[in-house]
Image (tube, rainbow, N blue to C red; front, side):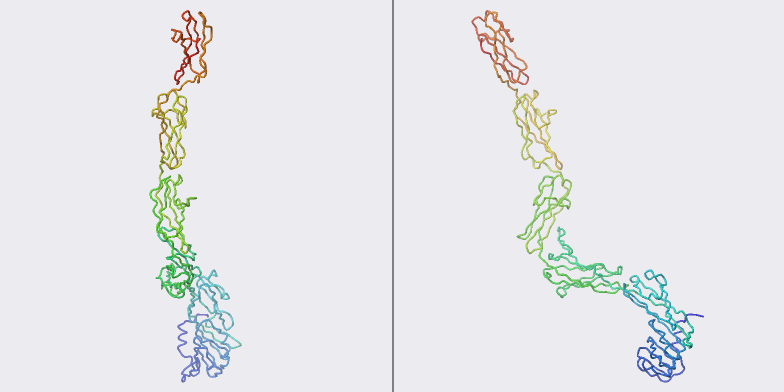
Length: 578
């Protein structure tokens, strides 16, 4: 019947001598002999070679050497206490051996995470391997990977695994070459594997630089090698294994000499501020990663070393003043002070942090697109031998609507005479309006429908004063209205006589004279007539024809024609005498 031999029983077996009383002990090499019993604790077992009186041998953490056992003719019992890395078939070299007892101690092994671990080979007297039972999962092998698969990558980082090694037979008997050998084996419970690791950035460690004086934009790239004095340099990475509550402490060296030791910073990196003394020198950082004490068995401290060389220059520093109140159409000027002599200054205006195309002068006039937005100006300074910097002004308050101011007043051109057309020139404003609108006025009151750039004077305008309101408007601006006026009263127009009136007919008593009005410009609405006798008006002679009477004998006759038309001053023209 198979059963497992207990560690207690084995200890008892090892404590009680296998033989009775023994003579004085003798030690040679790693072996001690007392009577017919020998105990070896190391590999120097030459004292046993050819020994013909030793019948019992105990190997305590000592290897089994078949070439030595083969010379021990009287050896009948062998006790082995040690690890699994043993070949029990070596015991078969002892020609008289009839009893073998073995106790395998509990073993704890640490394997670096990610490396390959190989189980030791171990065979019985019949050459068959032991069977292994794994108490935890090994990368998908399942609970019981085959014994022949003794090489594998380690399990998950920092996770222990238990391996139990079982003999197929306990308290059993083997027959080898006709010889009977009693087998007695015990195991030291379990064999524990631990993976371990070193805290490390695992190649992710890198230098990063940043330089952020007040108001400055991003001017230094993390990979930069030419930087301004005062730049902070950090070295950091992703520490592995994660979750070990680690901390990193750094030592900074300049050309091999320690310049600074950084205080511990949890899970971050190490920081150092560059000075001119660092320029062109090899800057080395030794970053020591330390685990929390709770991980001491599985995670160990280690040091990453990185180096880099920087060119360190004095920075071009200056100040950019606040922008103040900003409105559409109101010019804003950047205020720069404190720049070193010889500094070249460049400007770039921004809207909500975005570049405004073409806005690269020291001044900028907000446009309609800036209404209700915020603007700033990025000022860049450069100087040979210095590290150029860019500083951005404050963001303005939200930009309000602008106000037009009149740079040239509107005016009216044209004659203030009935029938003439007056025209308005809108003038100019501080910013170009989106449009102008017009309203003509008569004695200060709106003229209905008169909303064009011109106005033709009508009858209602005669004797009145004419003016016009010009309103400038545009997106982002408040509307602005100005008035242009003609101070003269609008007068009636005048006729032009192009051809004088004429009289036809014979001047004799009873004769009929006929008046023709002539040609007028413009054509009158009507004509009225008055005949004259030697300079005196003839009573009731007001038609275009006149019958000569006796009173006219010896007199001079002629006619006066008066033209009239609405909006025109009446005009009288005289015909030639008859």
